[in-house]
Image: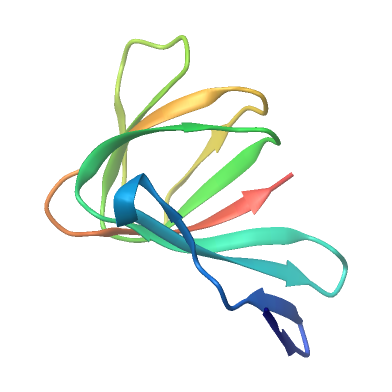
Length: 105
């Protein structure tokens, strides 16, 4: 099911991953651009990507490690990071939940 807005549609059914540690909703804008808006609870998780992603931090903090890298990098509100397509990344959330917007592209 989706809800239509002037800007596009929002999937009303949540995407739930890792036993509820990550929950998001898909947003499709009028021009066909897809995004997801979500939250990750404290955990260390590994995500696989199909398309390239820009992860925009809206609240909370996280540390990420891209596939093939050895160093963790930290991000907070107002910061973003790029994840290549057909890759993966580890994300570590400690303390407060991490809120994000994922821009697919």
